[in-house]
Length: 442
Image 1 (cartoon, rainbow, N blue to C red):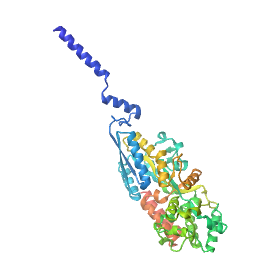
Image 2 (image 1 turned 30 degrees about the vertical axis):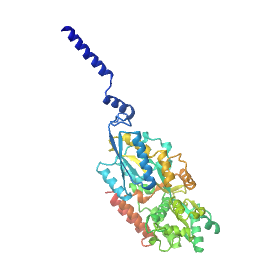
Image 3 (image 1 turned 120 degrees about the vertical axis):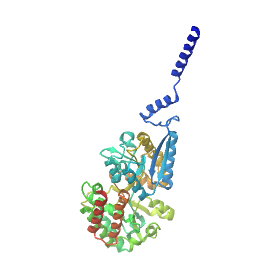
Image 4 (image 1 turned 180 degrees about the vertical axis):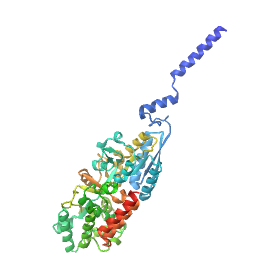
């Protein structure tokens, strides 16, 4: 009997030793999570990790959307325990839906923005994660990263960007002895020369309204400086009826009265190519438009490309802006919401979305300028515009993308009215400011 008890105790002891030496699956997974994710509850790529779902909202379509999809696929392969639920939305509805989601405390983990004041409103309400320590700022274009950097902290990472230069017909300029302008006075002389010779200075189809907005944005920046818009949007100084805005509206209407734009400009349709046809037929000499114009030319009239040059909108004498300050867009900028349950994983997703591979695919397949350094461009035009952006000191993002939808619409409507001479600059700016007070100070 005693021998049986001894044998039984020995068997139990052996089993206990074997159990202690052989770790369970749950212990192995937990150790892996702590080591690689700083204590994050979810695993970061181990097959045995807890299953995690991240949500991503963006507005990219076409080749850009495909680049986002490819980035998500790469991320999921690196993190087999993570599923990314992607919601691709239209521009204006997206703005409203994200604002509602933020206000309701249920935003996506990773979201698309344009930086600037639109992102800062969420930063100021403590709804966005500071990812300064998660990203290497040296990998990104300084001007692009600046739109999502506030108080020296990074709240979003840019992927691509656009610049709006003034494109011009090099043959027409040569014929009339014109040179790229350095100052606004130089530009006015060009306008006068072209009008005197029966050529419309600027091709513009402003039925869609945003096309004419470029001129007001540039004039306002050149007069009021790069902080004018942000102060008005953030309600932290100057306002949308500031004298700089009124003067910008006055200069715009001076151009209209000089004949700088085509007759019936507000009835012309950009989407059907009416303004571009003016360039192709050489009835107009210049066009202020985003870099995507180059792709339009290649699709519609490739032989015109050799005539196409560009310059940046010139400086205004006495103004606070400069010629190397650009109007453009940084999009997408990806950020992590404070409500994210797994912020470290979300930050990893942001880095994949803003990786060199993603940026290269967007640039060479969609014709966008990379906000990520190191992209080798297939397109010499995009390469040249990229160099312009690298040398820029400030970027004014598009008003209609940065402002809340209702305020953006008032901006577009009043700007179109300025082109039609149906409102005075003071009336137009007062209307924008009134809506800003209603929307931004509620």
